[in-house]
Image (tube, rainbow, N blue to C red):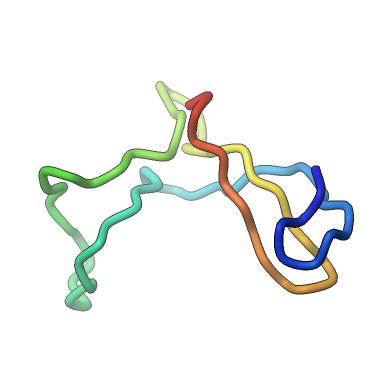
Length: 71
């Protein structure tokens, strides 16, 4: 995959976490736990395994892209 910012080739990999990976538009308040809210976007696949999502990393411009169509 080509980086949409600089055009360099990106490396395919995975974002991993010990908890679910969620995109939220509100600012975290510093609590250890956060209750999921309506509108949050669940990015991780887990089901008994390490929660992860496919991602692409650009070494040149230091960006990570996530395609969540195949989650």
